[in-house]
Length: 294
Image (cartoon, rainbow, N blue to C red; front, side):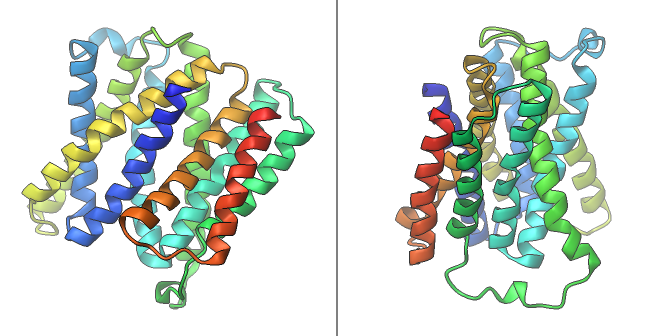
């Protein structure tokens, strides 16, 4: 249970951190890049040494670490673009509705039991996400003229976020058997890939004059990166602890993030929650109960 709570709280912290970046006018992309550098450093210190070496390349999971690293930084940027072009509400809904993808994969790939309570809980969860993220006031960004690219963005975010959660479950179940295994090395490798992609991209943008280096973004990246590493580490331990029940644990984790983030945004940032939002929060609690006990 402690790992599940850790995953929910730390993942919610990341969501709330991006609200702070916006308020302080800190370059989000640079903060994301340096966040991955901080993740690598945190993981190395936690591991006792930097574990990525030539031998890692021959590991059976190395190709999955490359894929996950690329997905990490790509999804962060898709979330950013979607929020800017179509609004934060659209980005939030597309991101969290993706919980249905790992659920389906767990049922069909691992032959987990799809009980009536679980199926009901997923339906309630999808409704809860939409209601909880429903904007309290009209978002002008969503009324602007859209094109084919903008219509595709939420779909890309929905699919990619769901596949990332599914990939984490797959790697943990197939290559790593328990909490005290070599999963740290895998995480550090994936974060290193994300960091390298980010640094190269940022360097090209600075050289071409598209961006200016921001010290504030470095500091923000460190503040975000440390809990970011442990959020994935906790999720990996949750999957190991509840192995064979990922069809329940991933939706519960995602709904917990939706619930905790909404409440903390209300408390810390005084975000207004309408009756519709509160109804979504209530449904989120119900969905967690249905999925967890299903």
